[in-house]
Length: 477
Image 1 (cartoon, rainbow, N blue to C red):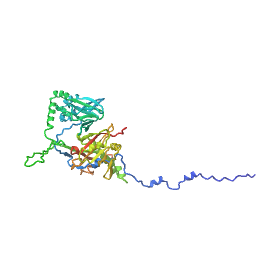
Image 2 (spheres, rainbow, N blue to C red; image 1 turned 120 degrees about the vertical axis):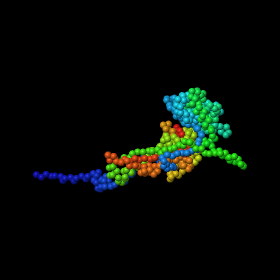
Image 3 (cartoon, rainbow, N blue to C red; image 1 turned 45 degrees about the vertical axis):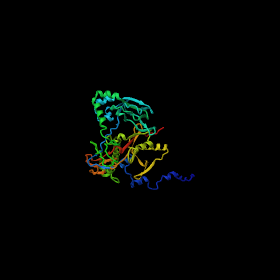
Image 4 (cartoon, one colour; image 1 turned 135 degrees about the vertical axis):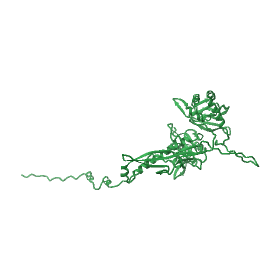
């Protein structure tokens, strides 16, 4: 019996998707095992432009100390005082009263404490007059918070702004001398102001108990005008000009400060550690020790610039003379504020500001329809005002109230300006003023290097640097 069978069906073709999975060449993943990669050096986001370090003239200081000799000055300006705040109550720190012109050098804590207790807190609204020109000056005022403008009479009887005062400033310190002086300006609140005031009668009550206090105030008042002074407050050099014949010429000499300021070099240091196995084996294509040192040096330079701005001993913000500090007219930095800041010194060369403060100044220029100028500096296109470059410095702090400071300076020894101090020729020096010294290998096979940089800054004369304070940098509604 025969059985009919159907022919076998031909196999179905493979789907196109399956054909595409067949590898026809070497994959890139496998190829990478035979190839080298192109690598970058280790990158660091914390590196800033550091314009301050670049533009300060650095002076070699072989003895580790730099002494600034100046002509003797008799100017006793109003200092800046510090307060403590408890809730809404503000009190002056007693020792800070020694910043008042007639109390400089007075250090009796009991008498200063009694005087501090006599200050009365007062609040003023914007536009309110605090003292009026021509009225009897019988109060000492300390500004705890806020901004005040001093107003005088212009040439044609109109108002002229003589200056502005801010947090920590004082006025009326001469009242302690007991003279029948009158206010030669009107003080008006620009913002809400908190003041501490001391009536002359309250001072007299304390002085009756502490005769030492009265004697000090009297001696300071007498000594402050012992010799004629020039407009900078320095002991005047008597000269004669425009005379005829055999006139008797005045005698003169230039007196010096008896105790000049000395700046000692400060230091920033760290110990760099590298394992010997890393240093021996993993050095291609880049040397691990060199890369570790490079990044460490960058961090030290950032710290160095921060200290040059903020250090309490030699930092520029803390060593600017109080007479060289001004307040903004309205809050944000305006062209008028920059003009006032520049006009306070001869030959202003640089302006340093936080990038947000520079942006705030640009916005104020835009509001007035002004075009901010530019200048070329070291191959960079830098914003400028009156031809003076405005350089960013992120080390200038911004407070919790969104306010900052703007620094204007003149630099160089020959220019009687601001200078940086360092010492070159150090053992194992890597960069000027920075060295890296081998410290040995411990029992864990870790190599240690001591990396140090030595630096400071000096202000040769007070008008070499000025600060625009309380600059608002937050966006205004």
